[in-house]
Structure formats: structure tokens, C-alpha cells
Image 1 (tube, helix red, strand yellow):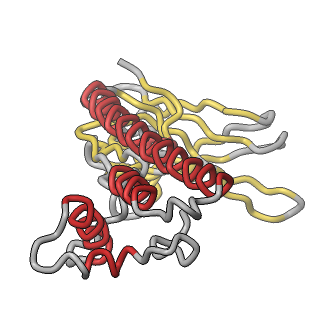
Image 2: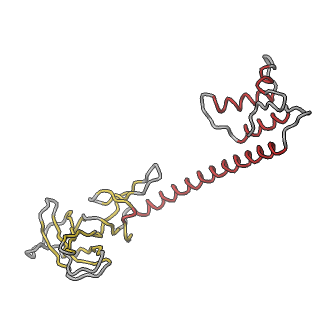
Length: 243
């Protein structure tokens, strides 16, 4: 938008405002209010309504013998149109954001109590029945080993998975230790390892867990699932959601 004080118009709007004395006209009050809305204590941005009021007031006070140039007027109208479009876009984005948060909350409520398979190295195991997990194998391997340790870090079971192709390799633990004895139910850690070109390689394990609650980010971040007895994990690390 062109400056409010247009030297080509023959009229300085600030002088017009000052010359009104103690009582301002409605047009001049509009200009003062629009200016104060941008420079006052609340620091609000110049809105489309104030922009339009300034444009109309500028036209009313232009020199009739030397009116505003047509191209300048069209440019100001284009600026007003752009401002209105940006305002509408902001309102649409705000509405979409609100709908997304509502959708996230609904999704979160449906996940509570569900069984999920997630990328983690810990699981709460009921050793009275078989426990199923899998290993993410990056390439064909001649052998793969899963070592299971208890909460004190003591190894209780080593599962030899043998030769595996790239992909997800499933394994089953019957809840016994290496001596064939049943161990107590509780939290256990799982570590999958192999050797590639003589170097030890650790792989990801995908293990089942139950969602006890869900944490929603207030800043638009990723939803976090709180797994019973295991802590929090990002939704992106979940591979499967069960019943």
C-alpha cells in the first residue's frame, strides 16, 4: 500500500488529523484507531478492515485536481485482496488444526487397552504361556541369536534362530531358562545379535505390549503410547495394533 502521507496528493493526512482540533471527524478517528492498532500497547497487526478504511480515507482526501494514479490504486486493491486471502487461509489452517487434534484424541482413546507390537527391547512376559516376538533382519544371515535377560540383567535364555532371510524373523519363548525350568513372570529384556563379516551386529526386536494410556503433544508433536510396565514409546515405532 502507498504511504498514507502522499506528497503527490497535496494533502498530508497527519496534518488533516491535527487540524481538526479537539474534535476529530469520523474519518480521522478511523485513521488514528487503525494506526494505534499497529503501534499501541497490544501490538496487534494491521487487519483487513483497518487496511480498507485507510484506503477509503486516502481516496476521500486526495487532491481532485491531481487524483491518485490508476496503477497505484490497482496495486493497493491487489494488496487488500492478498491480505484478505491470507486471513482466510489462517482461519482455515486453524480449523484444520482443531479437527486434527480432535481426531488425535479420538484415536488415542481407541488405543487404550489395546495390544500392540512395537519396536522395543523390553516386554512384560507371562511365562505360564508362550511368548511371541520377532527380529528385524536387515539382510540374509547364517545365524541369529536372541538373548533374554531378567530385570537384574542376568541372562536366562538364549534362543538360536539359525539361518534367516531379510525381513521379520519370528521367535517363540516358552518361558523357561536354559536349564528348562520355568522362570517367574515379569519384565524381561531381549537382545538380538548376529555377525556380519566377523563383526557383531545388534538388530531391532519387535515385541508385544499393552497400551495403558496415551499422551498427546500440546505442540503438535507425535503421539506417545504409555505401555504397561515398560514406559513410553512413539506411535511411529508401533508395527501392529491388535484387539
